[in-house]
Image (cartoon, rainbow, N blue to C red):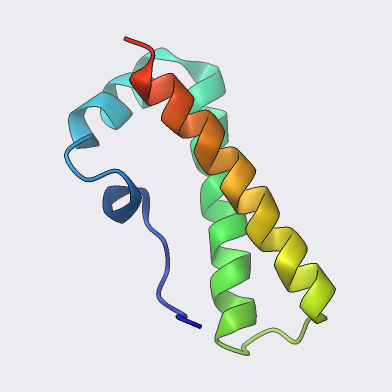
Length: 79
């Protein structure tokens, strides 16, 4: 399992301008970015064994990150 952070630039290459545009113009999108960064950091810390969490908790964090990423993707695609 990789412990490399899943930055949105890696997840959505070529969408940096759209992400910046939405971040500035859409408060809901900006909030999703904050939530993604928080959960992504928690996943990274769990995978790196910086924080000790149960496997179930770590899996739940990954599912949460995935749901948030899906919402971000949908908003990026809604042009």
